[in-house]
Length: 273
Image 1 (tube, rainbow, N blue to C red):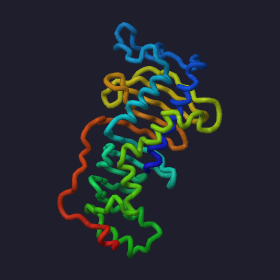
Image 2 (spheres, rainbow, N blue to C red):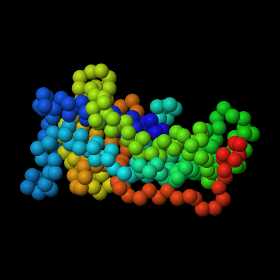
Image 3 (cartoon, one colour):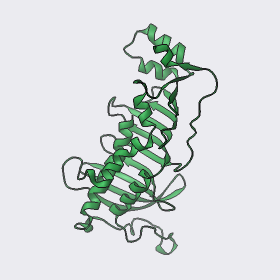
Image 4 (cartoon, rainbow, N blue to C red):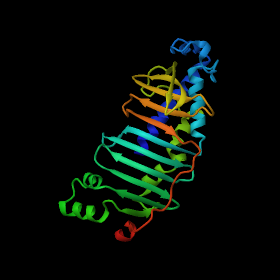
């Protein structure tokens, strides 16, 4: 789950780095988007990226996005382990707090909160039964009776919660993108020619205006939507790569609603001990 979301962001960052590196010698690869929009030039809003190539815009978007202290991720991505689809709607920050929902390819969902050193989760019955495949019916029924629709907690430092806890850390989720964006990696993901990018007009994402960038990296392609007002945050990422999916990025610099759930909470660490 964490690796899938990170892979999508990092691959785009990798493409950005490759483009920025070859920009000075191959600027002819980038195309202006003047003909991509049907809006008359006289009535268009001022272009905040005038004079910048697609590569330079993508680079600014990754810098702004990885520099945010908090954001919300929402969308569907391919899981590289189960080959299924994971649905995410998660707010997270660099204080390792998060709050949101995770869905597993139509096989139920789980609510997740991390605050302090504790992870809280609430599973529905479908999620528990899907995760219980391979277990005896009695064990699965017992888990459903104990946990379905109820909040449970575990230490974020425990072995069972480490992966979940690391996903709740925005530094971890976007850390690979920062590494790639700073030049630690580059070139095409399949060993072919350096990635190319073009501007492809404008669009709106949840009411926010964005410039559209098309990135081609070997056999893989991505569409980036970059905010044209305020900081050039990444607003949406569509991928047709092997980890295909679509993610929207919103609520930048907003507080994450990570609070201990009210009511009775099942202590999974106590049960396991």
